[in-house]
Every structure is written in C-alpha cells, then in structure tokens.
Image 1 (cartoon, rainbow, N blue to C red):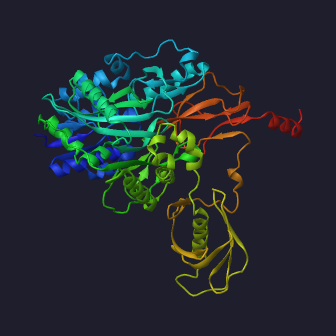
Image 2 (image 1 turned 90 degrees about the vertical axis):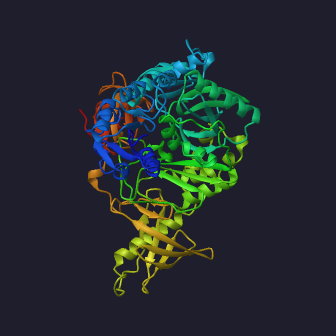
Length: 633
C-alpha cells in the first residue's frame, strides 16, 4: 500500500493530487522552486522540499533532485502530475531504480508513445519528409512534450527552415529535447481525444471522448465531455484504436489518445502517457476519480471488467493570466482576490488563492472551472454564468473571452465546432464586454468620493468644476461634484449617479438602477464587477518618455535568442522578428515596429527583463532625416 506520495509538479495539478490523497489517507510531499516558496501547493502538502533555483530547467525538470527529495521526505511513491517530467521514461526508471513506486505507465510504454515520431511509427504512420509546396500547409511539431510548445504552422515553403529552428529551440527549452518533425496540417478539424485507463491484468477502459477544439496557440482553452455530435460508429472506431494503441505498448495507468477529426475521418495525433489537464470533465461525466484509480492501479489492483457509463455533459474552461487582445501575452502580479460562487455541479481546480503572486516562470493557468449538467446547453450556460460572477482581482485574464466563447453561436452549434474557432472570431471575442462604460463611471466616482473626504465625516465645500478620469482602454468619464455631496455625470451621457461611496456606487441608466462594487488596489488596478480598469495618469512623467522606435518588452520574461547575426547598424523591415522572449513556458516573438535601422540593442540571450524594459531601438528614415535637420553635420 502507498503511504506517502511526492508530486513532481507544481500548482493546480499538485493541489488536485493532494486532494485525492487526503481523501484516501495518504500523506503528501510537495517540491518547490524559489519562486513557489509560498505557493498554494506547498501550503497544502504535509511536507515540502526546496529545489534551489527558479527556472524549470534548474528545478522541476531535474529528475535527480526530485528523486532525492522523495527519499529525503520519506515518500514511497512519486506521482508526476502532468508536464515537466510526466512523460520522461528516464525519470520513471530513476524513480523505480530508487526503490520508489512510480504512479504512471511503464517506462517502455512512455518511451514508445511519449515521442510523437516513435508513436506514429508504431502505428504505421510516417512523418512528412522532403516537404514541397504541394504539401503545404504543414505543422512543425516537437517530438516530446505538449501544451502547444514547439509547434509552428508553415504556409510558405520559405518559412519552413526558420520554423524548424524556432520549434526546436522552444522544445529544447521546454522539454530538454529539441527533436521536431513535420506532418500535414489539417485545417479546421475537431480535436477529439479518448481517455484510456489500463491495469496490469490486461483490462483497458476507453472511458469516453472529449472535444478540445477551442485552442489558442495550439493549447486548449475549453474542453468538454463527451465530444458532441459524433456518429456512434466513429466513436466506436476511436475507442477501438485507443484500446489497440494501449495494448500494443503494454500500457498501465491513465493516458489519452488524441485525434483530429475532419471530413468524417479520424487522424491519429499522439498518445499522452499521463493525466491530462482536462481530465475533470471525464471524471464529472463518469463519476470517477482518475487520480484514485491511478493510485489503485499502481498498487496492483485490477479494474472492473465493465467501464462506468457516462451521464450528462461537462464543460471545462481554463482561466489564464493573459491578455487575448494583445497576442495572448501572459500577465503577472498579485492575485488580490480569487473567488468563485458556490453552485451545485460546478468544480474549481486551482493552484492559487487570494493574495498569491502569479510568477513569470511557469504556465499562465490560474484555474480550471468545470460545470456538469444533464445537457450540454445546461452545462455551457452554468459555466458561463459562474465565470461571469467570479471575483478575479489582479492581473488581466482571459475570463471575458471565455464567457463570450461559451455564449457564441458557433460554439453552441456543434456543427460549427473546430480548431479554427479563434482564428475566425478572436477580434470580436476579445472586445471589452458590455457595461464597461458604466463600470468606468463607478470607478471614477468611487475614487472621487474617496478623495473628497466626505465619507466618514461631514460634507465639506468642494469646487463645482468638471473632473475627468481616463482609463487605458480609452474610456473617458467626466463628472461634476454637486454641493449636496453627490455627483453629476456629464459623460458618458444617460447615466445618473444615485449614490457613491469608496467601495460601492449606485447608478441609474435607462430607468434601471444597478449597484457596482468597486475595489481599488495599490498597483493601480480598479475592479468593478467583471471589469478590470487601469486609470491613466493625469500628468505624464517626462522620465517615462521613450525615443521613437523604441522596442519595449511586452511582458516580463527571459530573452531566449536573437535573430541570426542581428547587430546594431542593421537594416530591418517592419514585422521582422528580432528576438524571442520566453514567459510562462511560452515563447513570444518580438518584431520590428517599423522599417529602419537598428540603432540600439540591449537584449542578450539569458537576460531577464521586466515589462516595459527597453530591448532595442529601430530608427526610421523619417526620424533620421529630422535628426540631421536639427543637428547638421
């Protein structure tokens, strides 16, 4: 029997495994990097072991340190979570070799399936070789790992070499394995997967389907079970292929077989030899605990011959600290409040709590919110409403995008469901949600009431002149204090201030009165319901001005590489990639803002930068001409 489990991962998945362990009476051990010293998964574990350093390559990817941590803490089993070392056969062997129980598939099965190239060979599928224009578009893909890292779509033959190099570099950084391959890219298919679970006695369950078609940068955003609208014959075909693949490698434990479904046909993508991020939708539909089953199988217990049948529908949304409107740039900072309404049939898996800091080194996911209901429509409606009502104060998130996605007609109509969803609809979905102007009015009046000194004491005379407050999204609020202590709203029109206090404002518009809860924080952000507002400073600090053509870091991160041969004095073209930043396990390309001459380069590989840091300066010909006129030689 397993008595103590070390989870070789962090964040949400570590907390999720710990929850099941507590229910089973199993002790838990966390590992943590320095950036995670006060993280929720550390606080929830019975014991924790420090992995000195911050970057994943120094900490969570160091199998030797994790095995040593397990032995030092007295653990007798290791659960790999997902990501990092979960699909590393050498790590599994090291765990077993140290006399610990490995809660995962046999190393040989990992080796056969964790490499996408070897998995395809096992199933008789050859990677694309000698790419020609007729093969386009193609997908460059990392042989190891997942999560959208090390993947590039190539639509022009001249872009292939650069895509291979970029994907290899990102894969090497993320997984320690730079092997990549090329396969045909199927446009706008559906991403469908099958959950498998196998024991050591020959029983393999195909435990339902999932649809994971809504993706950004090849990483899943919204998942559901079962995959809606699939013909029964195709479902049985997917089940048969998944069971056959599992048996072919002597699989034991949980795993996922992924397919791209297009034109009524299923194309094998890969087998993930681990627990998936989206496993909760399967648990909710089938009434099982996959982590508990993992532990039971690792202890040698047999599975029942008949798999549990499913009931109802479940939908999961991944809440990320990122800004979809600016290229999905990751966000960091203090998560002041993170609260979800308690609703029957809704589950929240998270690795954060109110007051925690979102670091730059790891994945940007804050939480997974899952809704289960008798029907798909009911689950979708419930999930959208819970997300809308959640209190998320801190860095910008994709919450508004999730709500808009769930309510979009192309998501609700399963006939329109495919991986091209965000390619078609992102601009509309990333827009500010309705009600933002009223939220801005509430924020401005709450701030005015706080600064006026009228609350907590008697009213004092104030100047009855117009005041203006502008926010970063461009919304402008104009108002005028009244002698009776209230406020007259001048813009936007049609809004009347009924009452205003620092934490709550009541407004009337179109005959409808609504209360707005306002929370302002020291980092400058103001949250009004689901709206996040950042006031613009009333006066610009001259020290914050930058030279024309300055290229500033859009996010905190690490410079991973520069364009080949890039040097000061080079001529660059608008949109030309100059350097790459890695933040929250994703690589982000930084391009030239305009055509001109590179007159300064402050970025260097390995350098840590904060948001707004000056990376380079590209001086355009117009600016050069102006400089020459002002300072003739």
